[in-house]
Image 1 (cartoon, helix red, strand yellow):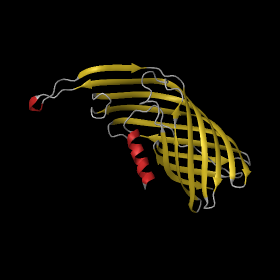
Image 2 (cartoon, one colour):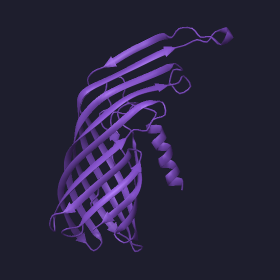
Image 3 (cartoon, helix red, strand yellow):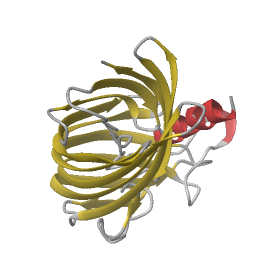
Image 4 (cartoon, helix red, strand yellow):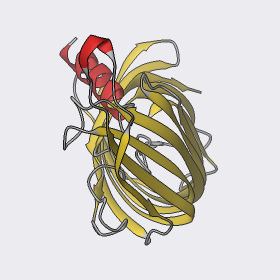
Length: 257
């Protein structure tokens, strides 16, 4: 229950800022043999997601991912991304597997968030407008082990590069002073800044995933990880609040065939 509460809180916090890149959970196929196929559905800090994988033979596999998030209580904040790839897997020893995978995909963010003075850093009215798309390339290494209780534990590290396209970020700070008899003065603009470019972003994303068999072809899974941007000057002057949401936490079900 604590983990579910943590994810719900994180999901709400994500909706309060126009993050340029919200990562999906690491797709860990954890294949054992040829023709292993998996489909997973989940929810978490990235919104609603799905992923699939298929082992072509005893060492090669393919995969695909996608997430969508349109949850916000203070404006529009829509993000989505999808990617596909493949890689190599093998059994190192009993109950210990290795996989090395890579892929490429596309993402998009469109947000217009209005933040009340109580929540803004300087006590002003704040409006953040962000529109951008990006191409992501990634390389990932996973290790998996099945323990004596039948829980499959996957350890993964994803290294990604984000290539911005049509980037536009605008931040408007203003004040409104209330006067007597319930009236208010006209809004005063304090600052209105626009950035129309961003550098390539590089991300390191370690994660751990737990999968527990719960029924015919079905596993319950949860994962937690972090997303760290290695070049904090990716967007000049606005590094901490719009680049990436740093936590990855999900809950879902995996169907194995």
